Amino acid sequence: MKAVTWHGKRDVRVEEVPDPAIKEANDAVIRVTSTGICGSDLHLYEVLGPFMAEGDILGHEPMGVVEEVGAGVSNLKPGDRVVIPFNIACGHCHMCGMQLYAQCETTQVREQGMGAALFGYTKLYGRVPGGQAEYLRVPEAQFGPIRVPDGPPDERFLYLSDVLPTSWQAVAYAEIPHGGSVTVFGLGPIGQMCARIARHLGHRVIGVDGITTRLEMARRHGIEVIDASDVHNVPEEIRERTSGRGTDSVIDAVGMEAHGSPAAKLAQTLTGLLPDAMAAPLMSNAGVDRLAALNQAIDSVRRGGVISIIGVYGGMTDPMPMLRMFDKGISLRMGQAHVKRWIPALMPLVTDDADPLGVMDLTTHRMPLDQAPQAYEMFQKKADGAVKIMLQP
Figure 1 (cartoon, helix red, strand yellow):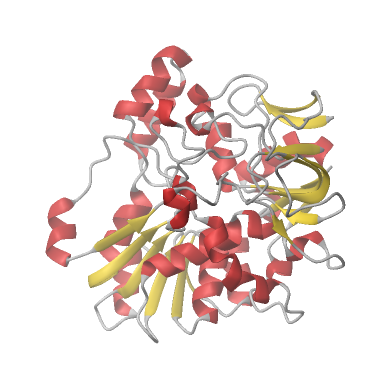
Figure 2: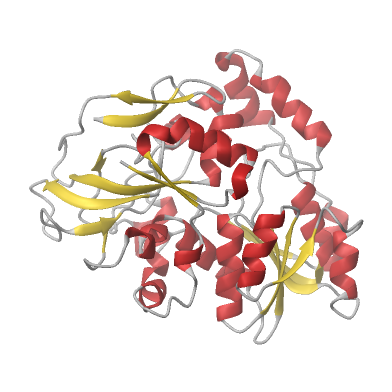
């Protein structure tokens, strides 16, 4: 089969690799019909190379049709249309019993000290082959796959794999009071959906980004926006719009590669020049992130407010303004999305023909799998108005 494989910084290729097969009783194999490129994939493209191996298959936002199931899978049959959550969970361990599926004890990558295994995402998360491919082996298929109805286009359901539950969790973790306000930093795919979900739930939403196409997309969905490229002091602008207080909550949908952090960017670049055997332990124990967005979030939230971090961070020695956070009484919540936890709330919205979250207005580019290298480059450079790219095998 064809698959998107990693070969180094900014070097992904479409290659022929062996077809996946059933290995365990709880496996399934699906034929992938659509798969997304996530902002987290760009971290592999740029920063997290020391945790990758040449030939690793990328991707964690797939959906498709079941081809084969193992003897232990009774909830699926060949021909079922399914979306695959990006994290791999068993559904029956202690953590899954608490609906903390991203911490599943059955698939935890203990040798790396990490949580549940993820598709297509470094040795830190199990080196499980990803879904930017023609076929995908799905472990723990007795629980993970989400069945969706036949008929509507893939875009109606594809984002149940990651974007929608990740965004729903970010809004839930933000604990926005009834009729309250939230600032969303970063209007990429996750930020777009965070903003739409918060507005759908009745909150005032201010979206912050510096890219015109992203700002325009947010405006189409009724989001109040701040153009970070046109405002000298974003937190000050937010306070001016909120009676001098700041918003009740803030969602950081940017993460480790925020613009405006030159020292941390230099540290990431220099680390990336080291041999992997040196770079990986350095990043694991002494890594730093670009914290411009998070620092602005801390400055923008009102006293006693909540910051929900959904952008991916990977540093271990990040400096935090603890005095300011303590003085303001800020609460922080963060973590990988517990995908299956949020599906009952999301399924009625994606099956509604009125499309209340605008899932049909998120994909900006649809490209064949063969064009994945061009797609990654376009997404990384934010060229041609790219907000979300969907690959189709």
